Image (cartoon, rainbow over the protein chains, first blue to last red):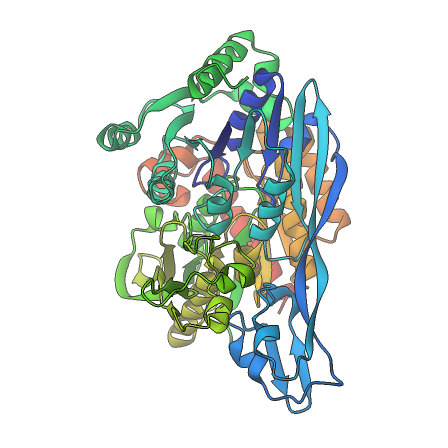
Length: 278
Length: 292
């Protein structure tokens, strides 16, 4: 079973929920797909062992063959190739490795090299196997790293995928083909607005979903009104607590120190997996 | 005179970028505002913009397959690097990057590329000044290009209004949207949270700014959450040549003001509001004097 944890707004507690479930699950694979800002590993300590340096193809022009006709530059929808009088420039960071330039080149003057965009690591603690994608600083393309990360993870057993924030392509790449998605939100105008965008996105994907309300407090009824109107089930409410926030700030998860929360996360996992996936 | 562009970013999400940025907007003298967090835009919730112009934003194109012409030869499936066309020639729209490879190789001419609307761009007026913003449509690609669109709208507004400052609310992360938001700005203000995750997010944001030769400044928000961690973050920043401003306190005014759909400095004159006023003075000192 594949369970995604996503949010819309950043900083609502995706990592808190994903890790809480993973810690109580026993044998489980946690996949940190927030490759721009991975942080699950901070709670396990260290960065893990290298599994793979992730690369994507990048176009290279064979100057001996090139006639500077400009077909490649015209065909590249990403604007990654510029042809000036007697030179072809490939802007590596804009090249998506789609291969179109090679298809249209009449002189067969384009080949590909591999270019590193990041890496995937693995670490293990008490049956929790954590796969993390780290995007290199300055690399724009998070999505191909997430795609590769997901294929490197063994397919059996329970998988929990910690998503990036937002609703754009890296989030879609993380959530698609999962069995259920938990959306973590908070009872504030920002939390609600970003949740509505996330709900629109996830309905397009057709993945079943439910909500966890984090930093729950009185005084903002609009969130509950929205959830009721849209018929979105709430699976858990975590109170706004300075104690929980302070533990988190030190890289500690409250399920490890508060037994009642270990119990509640266990129950949540059973509800989501039907108790059978573990 | 060209306007100074200040980007507020954080690396990790939820550290208080928008809360800080909205108060800076209230304090600045006739600024231009831009919200570049196009897939979770929240600035409008505090600034209540009145939309003056809007246009649809076309992202990358989408392949469409004409079933009547398709012979299921599989050429498109083989050439697609994004696994967007299955073996039985079904297109997965969410995976299509619009690269056109499939339409080039199709021997039957059965694949055409069509425009898709990926978002909407708005130019609005607010009580603090003109604002450029956008909203990405559900699950769309190319948010980096949409960020560029917002940036160029805000540049145009600054030119039209002769403004001194463009204040930009950035996206979280360090990928495509963050890089687009960063291009050509004069300085970055990183809002950091004193947590282990916050430290890592802040350091990645600073490294990204430095990677593109943009000077970075930093402020720790909600400092009481973990004062020791705040100190670690500030020391790391100073080692990297990052200007560090006075800490912002943990204050329920941040949430209370948000509930009232106001900026913190409009809401009250408590510890956070005072911290934000001091922050804007300190920022101007660096941005307008030292980086001039």
